[in-house]
Amino acid sequence: MLIDTVLFYIFAVMVLGGGILTITRRSAVHSAISLIISLLGVAGLYLMQQAEFLFAVQIVLYVGGIMVLFLFVIMLVNLDLAARERQFNRGWMIGLAAVLAVGAQIGYFLYRGGGAFRIASGGVTVPPAAGNTELIADTLFSEYLLPFEITSILLLVAVVGSVLMAKKRI
Amino acid sequence: MHPITTVHYLALSAALLLIGTVGVLTRRNIVIILMSIELILNAVNLNLIAFSHALHNLNGQIFAIFVICDAVAEAAIGLGILIALFRNKETVQADEIDLLKW
View (tube, rainbow over the protein chains, first blue to last red):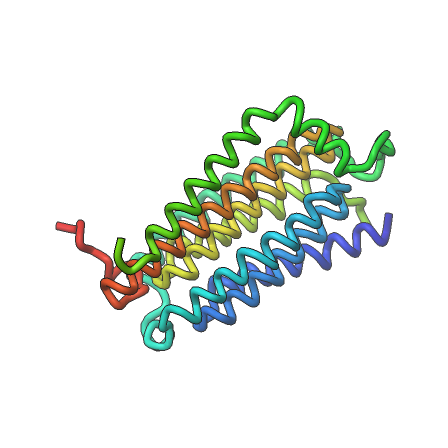
């Protein structure tokens, strides 16, 4: 139990610290590196909650795929000029105030209603009958077959769309 | 030390969501705005996984997979738009792109 708690706080610091660095760094490359730290923390939290398949997907897809895409675009687009300019827009105080208001609401909700999640005390876990990946595959290819197929159409549209956007002449 | 409950995960996920929202609302650089959107989607995933673990139900993890697919599509399209935009306007600052503004 103790090691769970310690690991949770380590990952939480990774997630939140990486997130804060992502939105405050001046250089986009530094932001991308901080985002990778944050995503790795999220992957660790998946592993702590017995979502092993998503842990692997998170690392392979996010850290290996999306972040490399981001870094490629950062290299393609010249960001030197942007790094020297103002980093926050003119209405940043309004945005921050709105987010803090929402945060106060969520905090109040979790403070007052947290007891309702008592079902959820972690630790009491039933060992599953099969592996996590196997169970996910069973559910995905039986109950969620149609959404799964629709996702493939979504990805096809995204591929065609991004080629169309990035092409010089159509 | 208290054991970690779902509420801890929900609070962490809410904090990550708020950080991402601050990034979207206040930054000027479009690349970093897109990264903040990734943070928001990760917060959603964390929430889904927390409830999936708490309720011993796999549907949350399936939904998280769909959310990840969405994030991939969004990143690809968003970065494609960014490249097209940079080619035409030579800027990546969100508040300098005001062609539709009166």
